[in-house]
Amino acid sequence: MSEAIVSVLSDHVCQLGEGPSYDPATDTLYWFDIVNGQLLEKAGAGGALKIHELGQMASAIAIIDEQRQLIATETGLHVRDVVTGRLTLHTPIEADNPLTRSNDSRVHPCGALWTGTMGKKEEKGAGSIYWFFKGELRRLFSDITVSNSICFSQDGALAYYTDTSTGLLMRVACDPATGLPAGEPNVFVDHRSSKGYVDGSVVDRDGVLWNAVWGGKVVKAYAPDGTLLRSVAMPVTQPSCPAFVGKNADRLAVTSAWSGKDEKQRQLDPQAGMTFLLDIPVNGRFEPRVLIA
Image (cartoon, helix red, strand yellow):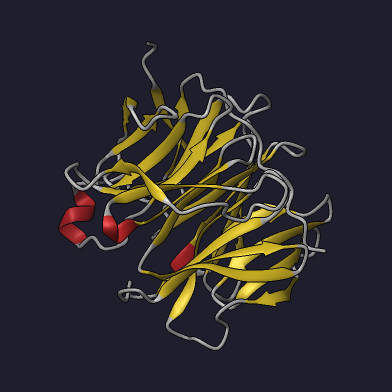
């Protein structure tokens, strides 16, 4: 198996880098510094970094069409005008609860969005995971402390998610036409005896799930049966979320964070908060567009 080459994709330091998503039409990677309310944007080879101030915590982005994006924030789902950057609230989610914010989200192959919330101070059970499709919103799972690892198989028949606080990565059958759960969740990976915590994930065309292990200094790849296939060492302690990037979706971008570290810990983890490129052959795929109406 080839050795992974890990390089710095962006040396901009995020306190809580998260939510990377790649737009193949423009060869652009988007990601967030959640707690500082920033959307970051970087076009491929040699593109300059752009930082957009959102004025609120935000964590995930999906493409609607060439002119519009959907952003998950602490007040709900906002439509963003690509040219002007203007945000327009589309669907409030826990907007009346100042204790929670958005967290991990991803688009199902049918165009539905699963989007998670959590307490801003990781309050136990304060968050939920929601399903949003063509303007309809439903709560799927409640009593979630840290919503994470939301991703789907290519055929839309399986969904994955975790409450990071449990150490259990869950899998549930899905209706491919709607993205709604079609059964009861079961444990896909029990990570409780391993170092670190299950954070963001993506699933490639082969059904391999790639997971960033917060506190574990590694990205892990799991076969469709949950077997650990490989671990890719990272130069930071807190990798947070991967995304497939490149014209063939055959590489991984991985965000990271320094959140929770004191000054001494940051000195020992000097690249914490940067965003990385894993030059490792992966059979990735592009994110579907989200259907808002």
